[in-house]
Amino acid sequence: MSRMRRTFGLIFCLVCLVSCVSGQDYLDPQGPVYEGDYAAPAESFDGSIKVVTWNLKFAENPAEAIAALAQVEEIRDADVLLLQEMDEASVDAIARELDYNYVYYPATIHPHHEKNYGTAILTKWLIVNHRKIPLPNSVSRVKQLRIAMMAEIQVEDRLLDVYNAHLEISWMLARSGRTQVDYLFAQIDPHADWTIVGGDFNSWSPGSIDYLEERLRLLKDR
Image 1 (tube, rainbow, N blue to C red):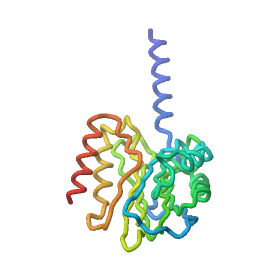
Image 2 (cartoon, rainbow, N blue to C red):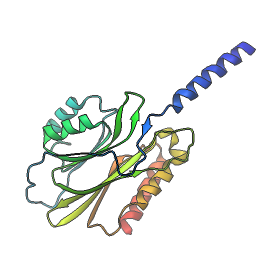
Image 3 (cartoon, rainbow, N blue to C red):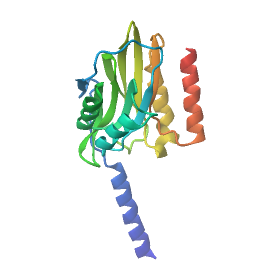
Image 4 (cartoon, rainbow, N blue to C red):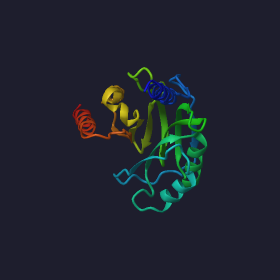
C-alpha cells in the first residue's frame, strides 16, 4: 500500500509540474508588436460591420484557415477578424493572402511549440492606434500571461474601438475569470464612437456566460 501511495504521489507531482510549465511572458505593455498593411482602400461604409472571431489552436493550420475565410459564406469577407492563439508568421500570411491590415501582440512564447502565442486584429479599414492589455491572474501557480488587445479603426469619419480578448483556460474561470472580465471592461472607453468586444472568453459554464452577458449589458448602458 505504501508503495502505491508513493507512486501515486510521484505521478501527481509530475502532473502538477507539467501543468505549471510556462513560456517566456512578454510583460512589457508596449510589445513586442507586429503590424502589416495589405488592405486596399476601403469601399464606402454601408452601415453594417461583419465581425468574425476564431481561435486557431496554436496557429497550426493557417492555410486551412485562409481557405475557409475565403470560401465559407458565414465567415467570408469579414470587415474585422479577431484571431487567438496566433504567431506572427501565421497572422501575416492570413492578412497578406486575404488583403487585411493587422496588428498582432504575442503574450508569451508557449512551451507547446516554442513560438509566439497571442492575439491579432485584422481589418479592411485603417488602424490608427492600438495597445496591449495584460490581464491579471489570481491563481499563483499558473504563470502563463494572458492578454487582450485594442485597435482603434477609422471607419470613414467615425472611430471604432475593437477589443480582442483571450481569457484564461476554462478550469480557471471559477477562480479568476471574473477578475479578467472586470479588468478588461474597465479598460474600455465609454465615450468611443463605436465599440466591439470579442474573442475567446472560455465561457464554458452557464454561470460564466450569464456573468459575461451581464457585464456586456452594463457596458452598453454606460
